[in-house]
Length: 99
Image (cartoon, rainbow, N blue to C red; front, top):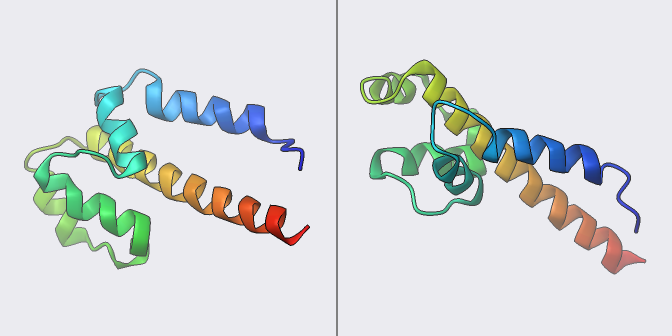
């Protein structure tokens, strides 16, 4: 199956996961892939990947004592991108298996 959005997706991945930011690219990549993260970010990243709708303001408020708004934004976006890519890959695999 041809992926007509491959170039666009790769550009987004490059910008979000490896582009300049307030957080290290390694941290953003770990958030996207649920890799090795600082202990205080593990629960947030796991929730974003599994149940993003359950994240409350109080969780982010606690993290604001250690991270700036920009840093938290980058971690949240990287996590959401990773979760979306995981779901996309699963969907594409299912479509491939169905044909």
